[in-house]
Image (cartoon, helix red, strand yellow):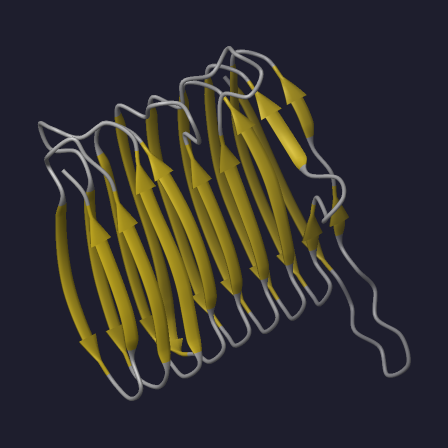
Amino acid sequence: MKKILTTIAASLMAVSAYANDIYVTQSGDSLDLDITQDGQNNTVGNSTTASASTGATTILDIDQVGSSNVLKYQINGATFTGTVNVTGDSNDIDLNCDSTNGNSSCGTVTASITMVGDSNDVDLDIGETSDASNSTATITSAGSDDSNVIAATIDGTSAILTITVDGSTNNWLVDIDGNGDINGHTLIHSHTGGIADVDIVQSGVYDNYISLTTSGDNADIDISQTD
């Protein structure tokens, strides 16, 4: 198991700001990567070049503190555990665990994303066209945050997604697809506050389950389930 700990602090000056830029490309059996970034314009990967890990087991623990944070990470491996904590505004988080190169099943996935701040954009893809036999994902807006946009696609025989968002002008699209039956297709949704525009799609066969608690103004929620 490779254990990597990275802690970076950026100083803010009156005229200019220094950015923390980290790009990771790793290949091997196991990776345990801890990153802490403090300052604005933090990036782990970017919109054109994502950080990437290929191997049987990947463990990520990433903390970003500051505004305009960017996290783009591509995981390819059977087991993925990811913990992301972001504090600040204008955060862009994109996590993918897929099988595009043919040697990854994303079989066991545990992902937790916690945000404190406004204008958060989260894109979480687990399994893609592959089946995750055991995946649990949690996306939480810890404060009364505004302008949250969440897109999540979770594929697998046992896919559990929990979204808890509190704030105004929220929008998220969820697509849980793949194998149902014997505890597949689970979504637990909790929303409090402001505007919410939510579109949820789950697919069969069987085992569709949604637990929904929503409160606030102007919510427009569409749910489609198939057997």
